[in-house]
Length: 392
Image 1: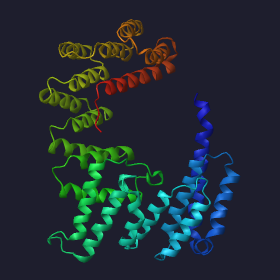
Image 2: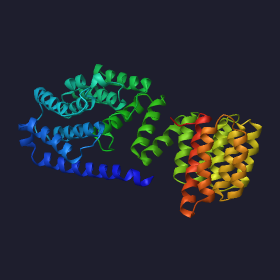
Image 3: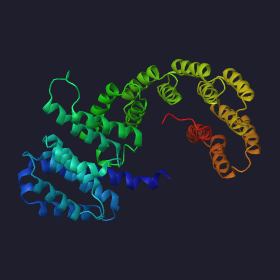
Image 4: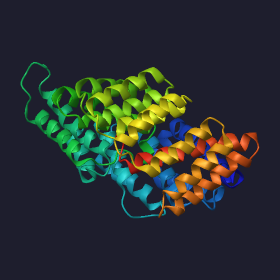
């Protein structure tokens, strides 16, 4: 199975190498590129067709988008509206899918922001409001930047442009758009992300009692793989909104990921006090006991789970997980059989899970180790979904 993915992995690596080569060429020859856009984009398309004849349409178009981002970023002069439209037109003309140009328009909008042409930037960005929440933040930034240019003393009352920026951020908060649809900007240091975080920090001060801004920040930090920022936001969120179980669940998950058992246990204790009749803290207690290989703690939470009418089929699945994590192969099979009996109507999932369990029981050391990890992760996700537990 791993071998089947190798060609795609190698292709992606070669694409990254071509991306780096193309970016370097643009930076070193920006004057020539700007002066002959049709030839340049034709060269990019020809290179892609020759080097990657079987490249899928999405990856092909993403490469064109990334090239345009680098080109406009390298442009030394403030681009005129005519130059921007000419660049976007040639970029679109060399893409395979000729429908929509969201990424290209956002690239142009960001270039106009950097040129302090905020009014025209909004024209490019506004049509993609709620397509990706980071665009909403860029629109808000354009309004806010105009207010700062006209009103530089922060002690003044918010003027009309700042009010529009605040309204834009409130709209973002209420609409819950995705935060990762524009893939070319998913690098942590992308300009669109920098603007998003700048505006989110302002929103924390503008709307300190609204937890949704923290939710967005935590989600975006998770998408970026920025564990430090995610931890800081969760710490602030749990302090300001101690009754919000989503933030408590997020904090628990981060502590588990960081192998910080004592802090994770503290979250479980807090949730037990705040939500004594809910299944969330019981599940987290069971999960922590499994990860810590603590059968006595597991038994204690299991008794509580029975009293609180925790779903029986989930509890029996977790029994099997505990035996797997403790490397008790015979016992894990016995527990799994009990879980199957109590899980009528879920044969499709249990059949898959049984194959994984068989690898743990019958496979060699390496295969058994992988199966153990997959078995735990699968049942964990299944339980979280069934109990409707989540941080988002």
